[in-house]
Length: 164
Image (cartoon, rainbow, N blue to C red; front, side):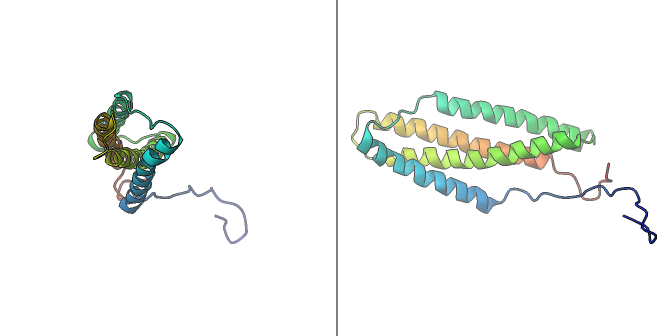
């Protein structure tokens, strides 16, 4: 700001807010994943062998769930229980992580679910195995999205909190 004589005053701190992740956006990413996962089977059949889903994929997603969950818990305790403030860069990093993981979790959940559904009723040798493991990975992907939303919520501060 400047006074009427034009001398510069102290700079104003930029303020801002971020809206919570939209359910419509998550649903959109899940639908994109669902269609992509469902299309993967016939396309892979046409050009070779459809990919196998091992237990490594759902277990990797479960690891991400554990990391996000512990980060959400620590953040919740720091911000809401002990009423401490996060460093601005730390808060931004956690919010970016939460938003990205929510979108990727929804996409992975939809993709693995689509791939699982594409194997239902197929008389192939490993069809049942692919369907069950893909369903487990879809569940783990949904867990990633859910815990990411918990982290996002843990970063939320009340609007009546004083500015730092």
